[in-house]
Length: 122
Image 1 (cartoon, rainbow, N blue to C red):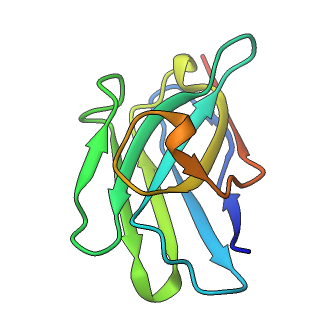
Image 2 (spheres, rainbow, N blue to C red; image 1 turned 90 degrees about the vertical axis):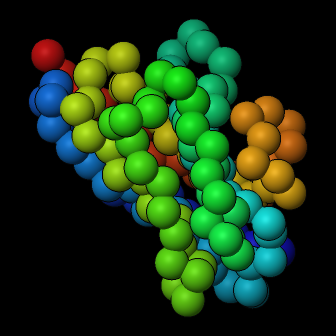
């Protein structure tokens, strides 16, 4: 089935920026939307943002509104997460997945990638 690969993570200082990518490989990806989630040590997986493929409708967690921007390139089957004004609270493994809605509930998504580590230092 569809395979997803996250990339773009790394170590960045507080106040800095990173852009994450989520690329679908292999067969054509036909989900309604793509979502970004993150998981820090000792915490549950947390919704970050989602975007629909066709119209680009978006949904953001309150914690990232105004700082993060989700976008997509339909021709490349790729979704991006531009992260600005990063703080240590953003440190986590970031995952992408396909979903049938813009839901913030992880159980509504599937096809999870392996994740990419984002570490924000003080």
